[in-house]
Amino acid sequence: MHSFTEENYLKAIYHLSDGNHRVVSTNQIAEMTNTKAASVTDMLKKLADKNLINYIKYQGVTLTDTGLSAAVNIVRKHRLWEVFLVEKLGFKWDEVHDIAEELEHINSTSLINRLDDFLGNPAADPHGDPIPDRSGTIHHKKLVKISNMKQGQSGTISGVSEHSSVFLKLLEKLGLTLGTNIIIAELIEFDGSIMITADQTKELTISREVAKNILVML
Amino acid sequence: MHSFTEENYLKAIYHLSDGNHRVVSTNQIAEMTNTKAASVTDMLKKLADKNLINYIKYQGVTLTDTGLSAAVNIVRKHRLWEVFLVEKLGFKWDEVHDIAEELEHINSTSLINRLDDFLGNPAADPHGDPIPDRSGTIHHKKLVKISNMKQGQSGTISGVSEHSSVFLKLLEKLGLTLGTNIIIAELIEFDGSIMITADQTKELTISREVAKNILVML
DNA sequence: TCAATATTTTAGATTAATCTAAAATAATAA
DNA sequence: TTATTATTTTAGATTAATCTAAAATATTGA
Image (cartoon, rainbow over all chains, first blue to last red; front, side):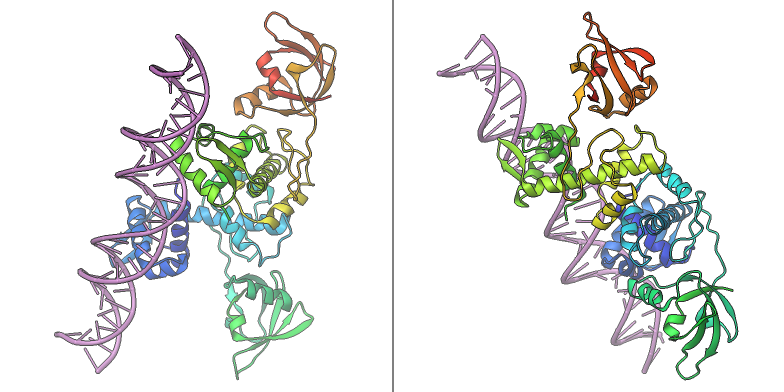
């Protein structure tokens, strides 16, 4: 098995490469893991030795198939635990990230598969992010940012691309949580803000910055 | 907060001192933590510096009040997770120890208190061991070993003092699980084995070794 | 294209947890 | 009571993960 630390590096590389095989730089990893570039270089050598990444000095890094599947497994655990925390223990969606960050390193396949069943094999976590199934397959939904929608279009809020507690709390306050139906009432040319109708009743205006981080299923 | 490793030492000292302030030796700790005496000595100095233990060179160790409460908290977490694994995820009572050993180090008071409520504030874990409440108080039940019972006495199996998977599986097979009512039918003088009647129906004989590790509420 | 800037790696230390082997202390038994 | 044995501690290394500062490499823009 891989150490707690190795797992965090794999996860960082995974997220930085958009869950793909895209090349990631040392500095990006350093920023995401809150370490220094020199430390990252050391770890990259180690992960390359273990065949979890493809690493060429000064050129950057990609996950190998083994590394990708290890990373996906960590993401699966993280998201399932988040569902547990919200659905079963009653946490708010902005409170679960840090706890899931610890729980994701618990190592037991039978635990996680039983948890998956206990939760009813959810397709997405409390933020709408898809949960990889036990084979590691991720069933992506096609989602669009509110900021890319046209006037008159409608859809259901199904995800966010910003996971900070401040942002999530704001959406909560605005009533723009997952499952909310929205219609684009008007695009304000002046500052890019957008007037929307939520659940056929409430009218509100959100900034472009907010609109960019809300994902809608049309 | 304390490191994973420090927590394991505290827990070891706690168990070795019977949850009390009894003096524990370096070698005992080394055996319980699967380390060498020299490593234990190093850690004892560290824990003493942090005021978690009272340590006198060559004399042994006791937990301070702070150390005791930290240890009790770990035990609380361990036992609550065991209840979760058995009651909610359907694990057998002999399968949960190792997983709970990892989960007990997850650090969040709100998590563990919510889990406690979710489980219905259980008084004991799947092996009958008492679960400390959120203030750290342990409500002990008076239990006696079957090996100390007299002919004709009866009671309910409410705990075990041996937690190995082999032993627990044996009890499972014999039908001597928690909640089973037993009556001491006969004490066999020859080898100390004991004939018992379980749930008023099944008669069976258990060795003295087995009898010593089953705890009964009279 | 090449000099300035940015990025990445190497070199050399540090900290936590561990080890083995040797020294110090305690316990025990003749 | 003292010699032998057992326990515990110290001394000195090792491994994983990290750091800072300096060196190496890559990128950029005049």
